[in-house]
Length: 160
Image (cartoon, rainbow, N blue to C red; front, side, top):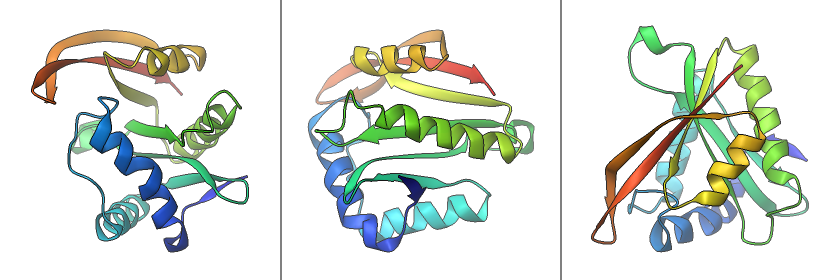
């Protein structure tokens, strides 16, 4: 079931997200989330009409969220998302279900485009987005840095 995230989900969300932040190049950030930072993120997104969804099957399997792509009113209809699955949730259609739900919410809120910034080292992430109808716009060489090395960013987009 895809539903809105609530405070009771925070520890499960952090248990999925923080190891990815800490141990992989899926995200370029190295700053782990806290219950407080997660609560603030969700509150800000909700105040802006955006959302944070979880896939719940008796436990949190993954999550998806989105916010405005860039600051400024000229980008009010362009969104960027994050979708992350737990280690045992891949290949079961959960990511697709989260994204379908997120896209519907974004579209209903007036979004026209949805962007994905995918690590150049995350070939499964690029393939996942391609299967959902995203197209690669650019590969930005050495756009990020983590673990002492430069990382490419693949910028992808889907018209809603």
